Length: 332
Image (tube, rainbow, N blue to C red):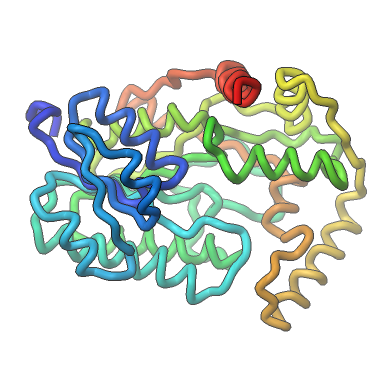
């Protein structure tokens, strides 16, 4: 696609009104693309509109909405998804599986030149330390939670399709506008304190959301990208406690850690989650097995492939990303 001028390209972005979507729009607009921003949040959607951005309200589970939004576009970035650690299976299935199938169907009907599908490295999650995970190590099944199960099913639909698709698995997105990782940590720190397992020595990978948007543009433009799957991080794995200390130091807050024994806690968490599932409780358990795995086990990704094939290098370091986040919230 890079042999055509960016300002002649029209790109549909699903999930455009979400956290990542707004950064993708900013990245592509700065490179001259015309954007169709697709999402359900009408207030946010209209705030995105400009001479280069048109908002179309719609739902991924309605194929007519997707088809209408995709008319006349050259490429689609599929970033829309239900992303949570807890919820009802039918909600994840409809949003993440049926939604992806609808996007693929429309791509085939309209002969869309390229689809960039945003997946998740949560599919690698398991009760073990994992270092330098490559793209090929993804399991065929992972039923740790419904989100993971649905994202794996969506990837399998992509793999079975004839649509020229690039799959991206970005890890631990954070930045201004984040409503998940950082806010959860702050709430936990200000209430019960942050659980510290194994002294916080487990390694974690994070990614500045600006770097994810940049990588998505590379997937959109590079001729080697179609048919490939890429992990994505900031390429700065560090111990969990060091990462938290970095954030709290920059923000001027004091961390409140709760040192807990990992093995007994794992048994308790497994039992509680089992009860919640059996009773079909909609409320999220105090701690899920997935979140426990994040707190107890190292997980780092290899991004050698995207660096080698697409020339990816992070624009923003973790330190710069943390400082940018802190500075923004001090002013607001």
